[in-house]
Length: 561
Picture 1 (tube, rainbow, N blue to C red):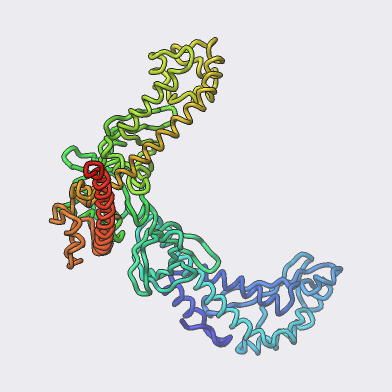
Picture 2 (picture 1 turned 30 degrees about the horizontal axis):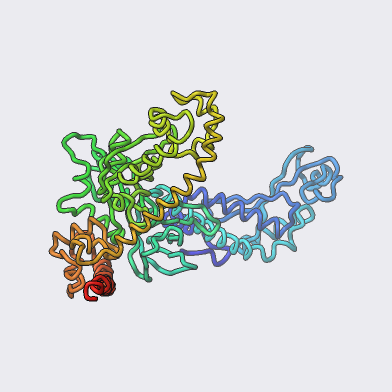
């Protein structure tokens, strides 16, 4: 871009080129240039002077003017440079009256030296500019250069801001350039964006030059230029990727009703269809899983469950907990909560690893979820019958009513509001104080009973963990391999990996990684976990065989004696 190197340059060429190349309105450039030139002139000639800069498009220069007001008598010394007395004006041959304004052009360019000399000879005692003219030509040129450069930078920043402000909530692709305190600086072409640490997926790593596809979380107007904030952890990245991969979503035939995500781990989306002939889940999965696998690959192996949306909250929650099956649902509308009862063998599947499955289902549906196995519910019911039935005035029918209202033990009665208890059908308000007093006594007995039950459950868990390996089915053995889920077992079995040994002995990791839902990274983890399991299983088998051998020897001794 040409810049003014001397005071005699024609600015029309510069302004035209900048306006064309940078997309800046020419009038905006001129107005900015005039303001800057006025400011520079006042600094040079004096802040008290009434100066104004005007751009002359024919000459391609910024001209400078000073306005002087005619007054009867000059009384303000500060404003003397901007005033002329009526007598002095008449002496100069001016036909003026008080209040008239005289405008003088201030000649500062080298090529205007003759006009400047003539002006000083005629009006020098009024303007008093002769000593100030020298040097302002260079200042004017430098000011014009700085203004145009700064305005260009500002306009470029504004254009970038406007462009990416409109792309907020979209997906963009860039190149990772550098790393600053854990943040990744991404080159988007016309601008740089930042992928903050908090918006990165913990398991993802990048190197300089890597392609980065991310969601535009925000566009902020900063003094150094617009800051584009990206996210790889946002749930919106998931939904936008499905919009890109599934034409039915982009067209509005299939709708993503809700989505929940734990970045790098698992995600769930609920979809519905506005066309009875279109299966929303099938549309998102695609032929042989091609569409969902494209999203999974972009999210670097993050598992995705696609569930059908249902306006019936109970049905929706049951679908969200898939692949686990739900036996019964108890809805608490007041607290927007549900108690879900599942078969015993489905409990761990429903809860998921570290509670992930139920946590995502709760986020997806917006309901508070409490999951219990059928045996646990049966145990809780039996305990409630004993605990509540021990209270005075509580018969079998009232126990049923209390249980239905969420009372599970005497402690709940003791801590309840008496007025609320009085509203329960079958409850005699006059007997509530005595009932609560007795409930407080029953609490200590219940605590001891609960402690005993927990010990028994723990013993049962330990016994299950120490079951002899020879008593386990191959599916049970696979389930004990770290990192193994029911869906993974199903996929591995279909692919021919039916035992732990099949996994541990597989030498071709690429082949194992080709199993749907596995991938090369998980294949390596599963193989290592299977090898470790076999070592632990051999140790446990030897230990249990030794215990059984010792028990057999002790039992045989009396017979031998």
